[in-house]
Amino acid sequence: MKLKALIACLLSRISLILTDLILGGLVFCFYQQSFAANEIQPYIDQLKIEKKTEEPSFFKKGQESYIDSVRRGMKQKNQVTESSYIEELKKSDSSLKSEKSEKEKKSYLEIEKEKLNPEVKGGAIQEVLEGHSELHAKIEGSIHHAFGLKYGVSLSRNISSSAQLLKFNDIYGENYAPDLSLFYEFQPFHSEWFGNVGLMGMVGASYFHGQGIFAKTLEIPGSGGQDFPSNSNTKFKFISVPVILGLDYRFNLLRILRPYVMAGVTSVGYIESRDDDIAGSRGHTEGFLVALGVAVLLDGLSSKSSWQFYSSFGIQHAYLTVDYTRLSTYTGSINYRVSGIMAGLMFEY
Image (cartoon, rainbow, N blue to C red; front, side):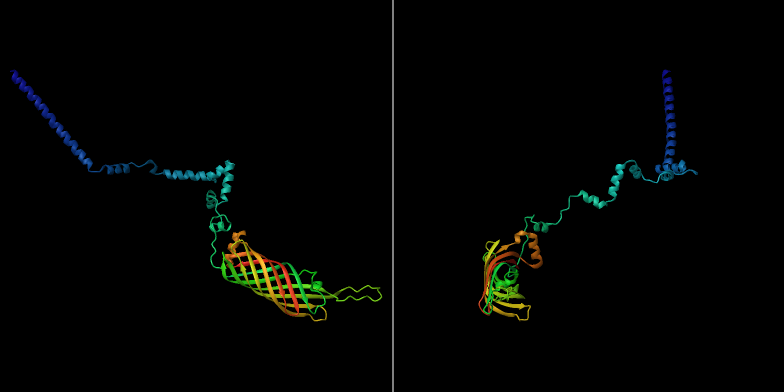
């Protein structure tokens, strides 16, 4: 009896369990089919549909967008004040105003240039010319020519004629007489160590003026032995033009001081005129010239000037010359002797 009751109890339990399983399976299938149907539409599309169905409040009729509201606010702010924010700051702070006004006068490039290092003017060539560089301007080419001028600084003149009654200095000696010469020199051989030999041609000119003197003084009649003045009213002019052709040698080994010697033949042409009715005289006389002097090199005084002479004219050396010159003639109607110190300039190229 107990066994039957136990079996009946087990059967009832089994039937309940099967019933629950069947009902649960039906419910699961139902929900699975519903979920599958919903998954046919992708999730993003579903969100789009939901967004479309929900209209934002600022898109509703009669309402403006957020951007339009911001623009309207900015427009109203600009109507209230026409000045910008920077201008308002300038009005409130005077230091900002002055600083800005100064910057406005300068361009952006000028402001940036002020931040850079100071500009170095000139360059390598300028530094060389001013002597601030270890580099040196290089002068190329050989020297075969020279030219220059000489001026009589202190000369003694002894000019005489067999036909004259008075000495030359009695008429012309009291007045100053300029003496200038120009020369050209061709150097077939030039060396900075052994010196140079030159064939030189020189042309000079001297000008003299004075007043005539009577050869004999005359006594004034009835004056008790008083004479007439010895000076006449006649004025004289004497011009001499010496032409010299000679050879010279210059010793260059000492560099700055370059001694030289010169010798040559000369022909002196002259003309004397007077302002009375008597005709003047003219002629020429021949002789020789010798000179002994020194040439002082001037290149080291100014590197810039030396380079300009070379770059513009091809001149490589410039000198100050000082010499003792003696010129003597022995032919013709006059004897022309001049000696003394002459100084000048010489340029080699």
